[in-house]
Image (cartoon, rainbow, N blue to C red; front, top):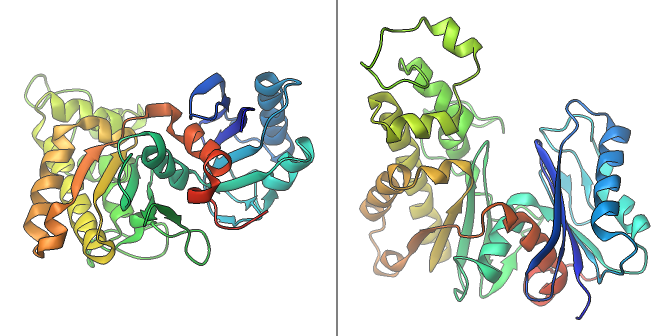
Length: 327
């Protein structure tokens, strides 16, 4: 396949598009802010203008799309939770009409990140891998026997809804104690605030600030939590430990179930590094009791912000491993 693929990555804060070469090299990438509160027409207009700027009149070998869910898969009518303007929006069909005569394929954005890490990132060379994204939500994708596993509805590998604490916080899925409810950045920051965390200031370094002031300033984020933990804030450190332990429990369960070689962990919260990976690894090792499970390795994802684009392109460029429904 000599022509490049158009890759599209749809998120609640940004739209990204790029031409991706046959080897997974990202070319001519562009990103724009997701129109806040945009209706269906506004969102589509922003995306259409973006792909026009990237692709122009150049021929492409296909279009790969990663988008937040839920969606009907593989036909690609999307209803991203963080984009109310799109509900059952026929995203795949719109892009197929825009680029006729070539394959147009869509998958969950976290699945695309996992595919990218397996194809060209930290999971390369492993036949059995779980790729995870820990950010505003917790998602993942599963590769077994060197092939992406889709499941009945395209949601296999959704590790965010493994239960890690049956008595834990309510989850947006309707369950309780899911990994996502415990470890996603906004939920973790909210837990830390409840424990007395004052964002942006190491405990004891200045006079206390009343809670309403810092909450209203909207600084209680997962990113700020990681920064404060790195600066030594005790509550922020406890929150990172809480997330790490939950992740370790979920990875141990997934490893026993799927006989994994490697787990890659990316997303915004993963940038906390050892503050997250330390308690994660400690908990994982305490719960992988069977010999085959002890060989699993947990490593940081390596492709950064390009991962979603690379994974979306792989739906076209490496379809023998990453695309099951046949066009």
